[in-house]
Image 1: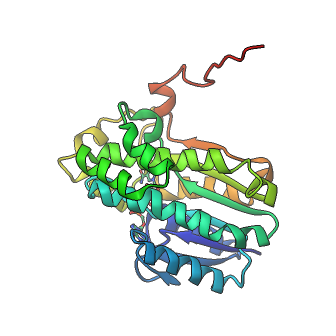
Image 2: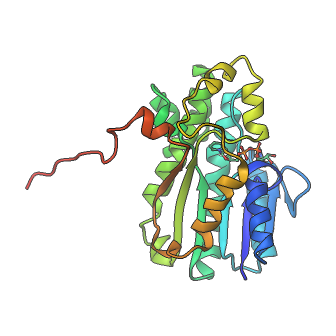
Image 3: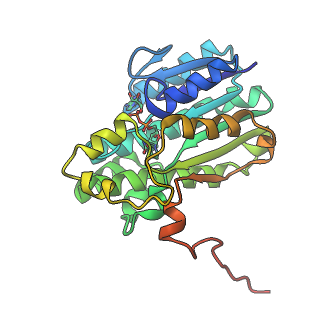
Length: 265
Ligand code: NAI
């Protein structure tokens, strides 16, 4: 049995993942704002550092897996959203990398979103701020733009880029850590409910086409996360962004995969 840390473990997808891992006999170090083993605010650098220190101590320097599920969505403040979703995730992934390496075979699943492919016109300056590690610039761009759906998609594009950039490298795959992301579609959680209840994105969320029918339940996403952590073949997955979205991405962008590219040969 392993030791797994889960951010955002008090609610929704994180809580459902926690329940699955606990039921399977694993030890879970939950991280959230309150009521978990580690309580801190991932919007702040002090909170992020406290999480890294507390998880490192609780796992005795060796962590078998990590799920980064803490996050917020519209109508949350766009700049805060970027801080929590991207920089709160990046700091935990980077800060816990060495204890993951110590497990020699750790699995990591970051929460991305299908918003990364189905949101048109995402402002590149928010994405650039994330990718460049410039929190002030990313926050400023999100605040000036002011549209929560864009800040949300940009923060998750940042996560996808982090995973794709780091997963195959010496520090991750080369240190026997598998780093992947899951990109869920609309899932019925408090985050989704607050969006549905808002004037800002409620109508857009209700009109999102989902070929399979309903929004997902959190356990339907948690089941995939558990498989990506502990399932047969998980160790061959590296740098993947796994879409589990009821077909919305396939419906909206049927020709987008595989992207064609050219080489001078
Ligand atoms: P949720 O609202 O049920 O759970 C999110 C958890 O993150 C909460 O327990 C919350 O307290 C915690 N959190 C938020 N800000 C925090 C902070 N500053 N510090 C520490 N903890 C904080 O949301 P849900 O839906 O379970 O979302 C989990 C992840 O899945 C998020 O990253 C979200 O962006 C992502 N996601 C959700 C989708 C959905 O439709 N619900 C779809 C695609 C991705």
